Length: 320
Ligand code: A3D
Image (tube, rainbow, N blue to C red):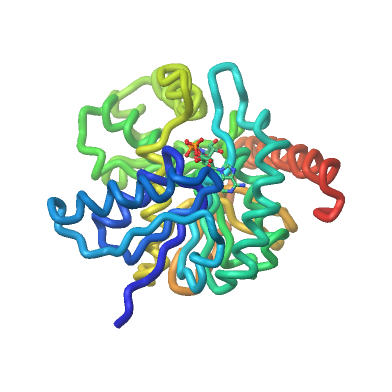
């Protein structure tokens, strides 16, 4: 059987890490695309040269020509600019919206059957715009944020409880921003919900609240430390998990920014919700019941995303 083809649109910090991870996992042949000539070709050659050591057979190439992504099975989009200290994700909107337009048109022309995973920020508004610009079916276009946000939450929880990260599951809903909603009730250590762990004295409510806040600020914490850009190892690992779920039809239940058509009381927008990812793309959305407080948090997050969508429409009327 022919190898799958994975196109990485944007070959910066996340793009390069995605290429290396996809090669290590032998998910398929990899094409790195970027507008900065030399970067995708250089990274492709460097990662190819690691192949004999890491023992992968993937063909890895770099290009500035969209024609080379032809027939891609998966496109992962990181094209655009990343945050510097003092910037919010929303500050990136104007520049990255224009980038989504050119990327959407490139995918539409050359890889219309791909499963598209957007990572470019501000995530929920960018994936919404990308779906519109590309014209691909909405179940084939999604955004990566929830896997990363819940991975950060899981890491902090595992540290707090001094247990393996493997036994910690976590659930984060809503937009990828300061209003994201980590759901403690649905987050567990080997099935034991966090509120029960508070009752058992494994942690205190105050400590748990601080971990929730640290999760919300997880991106800014890394930007503050790196000073030159934002996180890339964990974001890349998270998008690869989603790509693998699609390519191997794993039917994983993963949080993703997905197009809503009535779920959680919302439609015609993208926001982070629990989804099933398999060969059909976003095959299902798990429309879980929220408590009043959780719904209020989710609604606040939805309002923030809608504000960004309006800002996009003000820049590009074709999105209306
Ligand atoms: P960076 O290392 O700057 O790479 C971005 C790449 O995009 C650069 O190589 C640019 O040359 C390239 N680029 C710019 N314009 C275009 C274009 N029109 N077409 C093709 N390529 C282009 O950034 P990064 O890899 O660190 O981050 C990429 C994006 O991911 C940023 O918008 C970040 O804010 C975002 N990000 C999202 C998350 C989420 O969880 C959603 C996490 C971390 C970063």
